[in-house]
Image 1 (cartoon, rainbow, N blue to C red):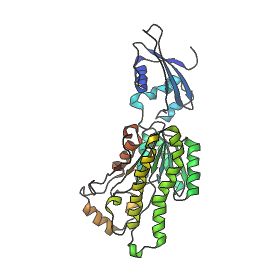
Image 2: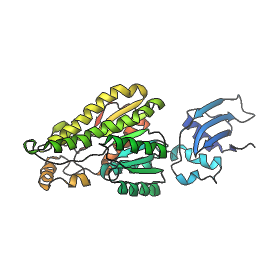
Image 3: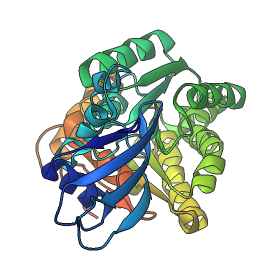
Image 4: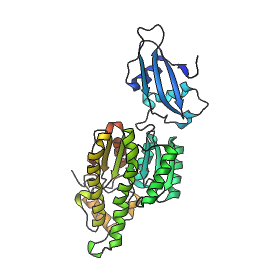
Length: 337
């Protein structure tokens, strides 16, 4: 038997052929697999001699086993293919995802779920040391390939450098989550120009800079997902947070406009607008503001990261392909739209 050819059980064959969208023949199938860097690049499907007819098809497959241990060079091609069974595939298998501000809060929750779903995850965060700790933690916990780098995402040079590092480490970027940001409170009459400019720089300018870096590759590959984390306050506003609300509303306008531009390239752009969520960012807000906010939420409590992050999985997956320029609002009923 030639190198790379392996006989599988009928169940293995049916699972793989179903993933290819083809109909299996009545007999056991033979698979001739070309493997490269632990990926199944091409899968040639032939009916065994003796079957009625001879169906031939070639399928380009970009899938990586969710269990990194199964990529060991010591494994045979047959053993490497076993994780391709449908029940073992993650929704984001072999996708390269970048999460800005992924070292804590909602960003960490999204990065964790992406790794669980089989993505290769890069964390870009101003706190480089913590980002590396989180990346190592996800690699160990989820068996995922991860990368981390430090960057101020409001700084153009740092963004270009960080994203080039990601591409070198993990490959072209398929999914971008623009999550990095901060909040603060102040009355407009008392707000300095510096305070206003910093809010716009970090919370809005960063979305433009990071998005611009990933678009060329997404356009070339005719696939991409851009998910921008805005806020319900972009809809309703909030006293003492005009600068924050302006930045977040800007994200929503950017999201819708860009969605028109790139959907023709099979790139979707959407926003998630969470309500008050229990994160380190929110805990920095004055307690008096928090007390007032809790009284306004119909659900009677803060949101949890694990209630927000699954929305980002949906929008990044194939199941989310019909969401274009959408605003999803997990907010406990605080703003119903």
